Length: 338
Image (spheres, rainbow, N blue to C red):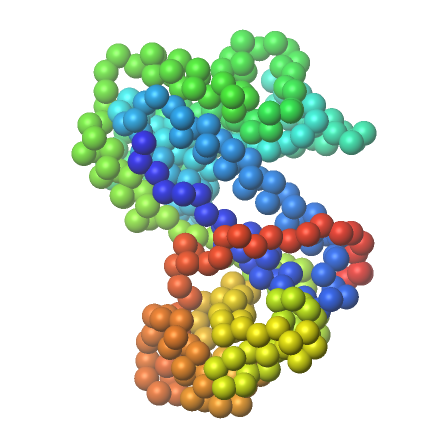
């Protein structure tokens, strides 16, 4: 199999960045944490399916994760796309707990968990919509390929009920543990290969070259005012204490913690929350440092792409794969923005 590791999306990274920038009294916002928890659970579910896929016997498959394409002035996103010699397979991944019921007559997906009933959009229809969008997109490149879909429940403790016992649903809505069986079933339905290895690789690169990341504006979405946010470089240990720059070292005078790289996360968080560029002046304001030369050296040390000269020089956000992937958010509760 040919595949790149699944990374946290810009959305997840932005949530984590915003939580780091919140002042202590705003970190426990219930709505914010619930939203983050839902997206993070989805990410973990997708990672679980990635692991199951990695053990599949068929090696000649190209895998694209979190693919987002522009189609006639609107975007559509696919959790996982398999490019096989026979077809394309869209995987729509759901990470729900509790008991799930699918109503094929009403086209409803129902979750019973923690004593509550929640009705969601029909994931099979979602996958079929993605299938149509992908087929239209491929037509722009004079390609007409068979596309199959699978909706996968990634939580192994979840039970799935097919209310009408519709036989088609058993082959469309599955547990992640059975994905190997269903992939083999799909492949057996094709008598000939449509793509050789070279054609698979060409399509793989074409799709990746047209991928467009979604970068949310969380400050606007949650109506976050500047007074909610920390100004400066927070100490990673004290969290609410600010570090001061002394020579080449950041020092927290509360806990005596020191760091030579504390500014890097703050600058990366700026790219995630405010805009994809930063100037020397903006850097000084962000880090609470007075010296243009110090800001220049800090930005230069991050080896960011640059454009413009002198006072008009812009430093650009690095690729998503350079952002830290190992930081998350704890989950206390109560809503204090209201």
